[in-house]
Image (cartoon, rainbow, N blue to C red):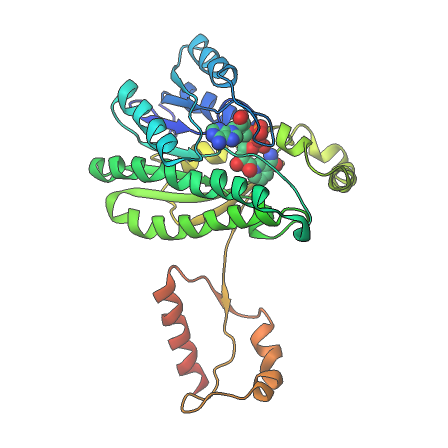
Length: 318
Ligand SMILES: NC(=O)c1ccc[n+]([C@@H]2O[C@H](COP(=O)([O-])OP(=O)(O)OC[C@H]3O[C@@H](n4cnc5c(N)ncnc54)[C@H](O)[C@@H]3O)[C@@H](O)[C@H]2O)c1
């Protein structure tokens, strides 16, 4: 038996009717999971809906001998999230894995982000992941087991022009993952975030100017790139993170054109100022290089862990 095995496990993959989500659902089913293939079935920018996309992936999974049911709810409402989890319970009786993957794209320069763009991206990417994960987490807590993956984005973790609203939603998911991983660990629920890159319809819908830039970067990879822009190259990391074999929680992992790596938020040793009275802005200015340079750093595991790091730096400054 493979170390990454899903026999007896039930997985929800949102937005699994195409792109990256389809490949996750197919591989999970191949490895024995019963899969809820959720997809609203709309366009890349979140317009419209249809049953075709989810149905087609369910057919593909069943044709390959796997177990799957379709769900067509939008992740972007509380009722939709509950409906998706209920589909898993009705069809398979449990929920072991949630891969929060559903999403759409609407790019705009920062000074052109209107409420329509902001609300639609926050509702689907950020609130949507919470709407699906909350009812699933209640089931996972009772079971004492669960795995949750949040599809974030390098745009949110590192930045990308034209994607202020999208990045806000995606970076918000890192915050949700940070907290749920702390709350869930004692219940056997592990959570990680993903920074994927692959050539999907969403990637193809990027601002043409950015695609030109990507095109040049891709060209610079030359022969090295092979087929690694395909969504299937992201899948093994996601499937591993969703498995019992994975013991990582609270992690941010990048899967991009065949390269896999950990990303993290760290604090440097910084500068410890006086504690009886605050330092002046002028003192700050004279220590700013020490505050800003990366040098030695630590990766806090929580807010209180950051305090422990500050305390260690207090003693160093004596
Ligand atoms: N492709 C990339 O390079 C890339 C980079 C960073 C992050 N991501 C993220 O990965 C995820 C998958 O993206 P993709 O590239 O496969 O795009 P995609 O457009 O091919 O897939 C997204 C899927 O989500 C579905 N969906 C959209 N809104 C939904 C909703 N409200 N409810 C249910 N389903 C909905 C769509 O119908 C679609 O099938 C997204 O969250 C995306 O933001 C992708």
